[in-house]
Length: 290
Image: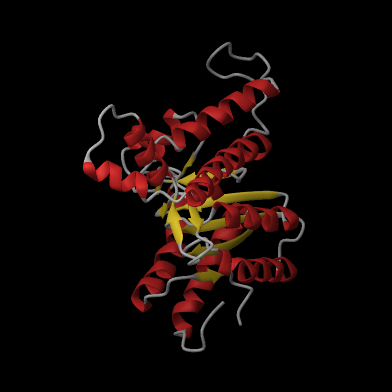
């Protein structure tokens, strides 16, 4: 989706590089930059519908999302996943740079996640939209702070002020956001990421993996990704090594020179254009130009 003022030579290159990546992965490719916000859902839905209609690869029924986001709404993430799964059987996520919080949730809905040594996901801290202002605010930091105060035997004056200021309706909203994120992660990991996990590879190699084991693994991953005591910071970078320690399978393209060149060849000029122009939200597909 391109503004009229685009430098056409730059986007001729970007479109060319997008086709190279499509050929490499044998599926449609889109670029998503920006927050995952309720106000952007219709734009995303209409964009994906246009990509599917104009796709040159209808037989593959596969899409790869090159994702760059600081996060956003878990509810909106769920709706966007519904759009992708309506139109495509196989959905992959590629994270050349960073996808945080709700972006991590988004990635966990994919069949495959592609990252290299410099890529990063983030701990899950869903942003909840406040009904009075419409602002998106991180939920877990608020919940964790209240839990920390509640454990104290003696409250400080600041603690008392904090407790008196608690809006129980907002607290309930934050708790619902936390629970929704965990539920989505568990559901999507079992349904998509673990769908081909048929046999154990380390513990009791070769023995069948049961549905109960998939659910238990997904639950553990969901809880660990939301564990702020472990990660310490909402903005903590979770690289391949940290994600693999949680038993999340990542397609590491660090040493795949051809695939790495294809991904960076598309991502780098795309993000360069976005950053130079200060664009907060952007969608791109080589076949969908307004």
